[in-house]
Image 1 (spheres, rainbow, N blue to C red):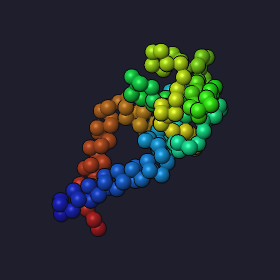
Image 2 (cartoon, rainbow, N blue to C red):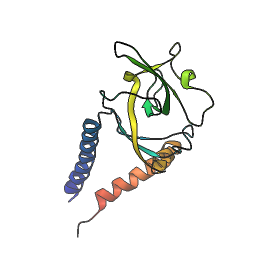
Image 3 (cartoon, helix red, strand yellow):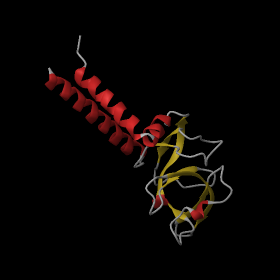
Length: 164
């Protein structure tokens, strides 16, 4: 019986991974779902909102779009709006971002000496959101003991659950 429960748990985990990898392929984004971690994009997005992203390389980046980008030297992606776009004759695009709730642009967040972002820095573009659904993720990161307790309870439930 325990063997089947462990197998059931392994199937749930592998199914979740397959769904995640499928979303990556369908959306073109290395991270198709992200959680807004700060209030820098209020009132458009609030802390804890869950964003759905796409990142199709052929789509041009335009001013006003909300992008999620990674900066060299920072682990956590940033969700901000594109405020300026510079397009060169050869097709290269550079752009500047800013949080809606911030007073200044993001040049202070970029790596030293970097004044503009490029397409390679973009993780995805916001296409939709669910308000506050990501608060669970924020709580689990802020309180690691809660995360481990929740994982232990879920694991125990899957392993100890009896089928009727």
